[in-house]
Length: 284
Image (cartoon, rainbow, N blue to C red; front, side, top):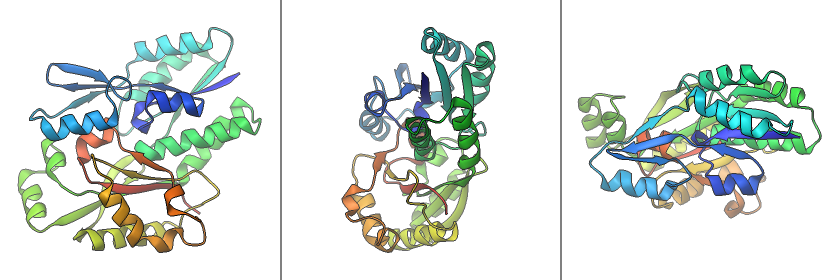
């Protein structure tokens, strides 16, 4: 039997992972003296409650080699094979640790660097499940994932620069100037790294820019997994994005309410804060 293992940077919580038919290994997140397992004893909703209310900036930790070794031992003890999908190696040392641990299980464990995070990593995991259900061998699945991951696009509009400033990603001066001008940055995962690819003033213009960038990427391949993502405790901005981007879904989705929608978790949510909205897809 071949099993799919994915880390919590995919924003798949433990309970959902079980329903999907895959295993999830959580990252550790700390708020001051408190530590939690992402998506296990700290849900995405609870994370944003703490992020908004707390004065302490959270810290996430990579999954070390010991933990990967432990879970690989457990998952392969009955002779099963494992495909482990991780957050981008450009964003975390998690993949490197998984790769080292996998060497002890040659022929049984295969580590795949998603070169992505959040729903970009999630849809790669969903594609892996689809291939297994179609009866593909473990080697074929790994080859397909390595090839198709190059087509994954993740585009998102951030509501505030405050959390990027708190995390030391941008200067306080830049953050203050951006907030005074109501600048909405548009980010993407490019070559495994998070990059600023555009800016717009106001939510409507940023949503329009996001739609233009989706089309510039070649559009969404609706035959493959895709998803909308948002952050925070309200989906108000997500609903507005759906309204502004109706042309993207027309002729492809009968009911916009059926579009897969997921709440961003702590790994990326720590840096982008609440009220972000985005889309993850395989480009045509």
